[in-house]
Length: 125
Image (cartoon, rainbow, N blue to C red; front, top):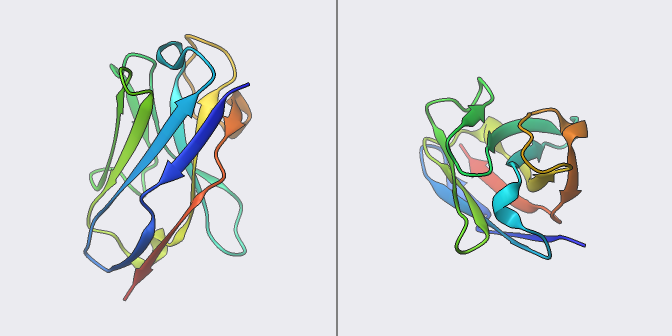
């Protein structure tokens, strides 16, 4: 059973930065694609970014491309989301997720089988 624990959320002014972390345990982390999703109040959860098991391939939603960077440290079983130039529309609960199957790469929510509890990011204008 895998466990994912996010941290690093908080309140930041527009234009600021935050770095989210997600620590994984209970599975061979280095064999799985990791992703970040977010859910704003009253909206469905949406894809933000994903990174392949060795970090060689990354995907981003158009809304965050050029502002957010996903990375991972397999030695620490941790995935990161560096968020720069934050805007009020980035306000959401951010979730990290682990792909259902090893050595698969995707960005659809249904492809991810394990989820963290979420961390709140609030961007004030």
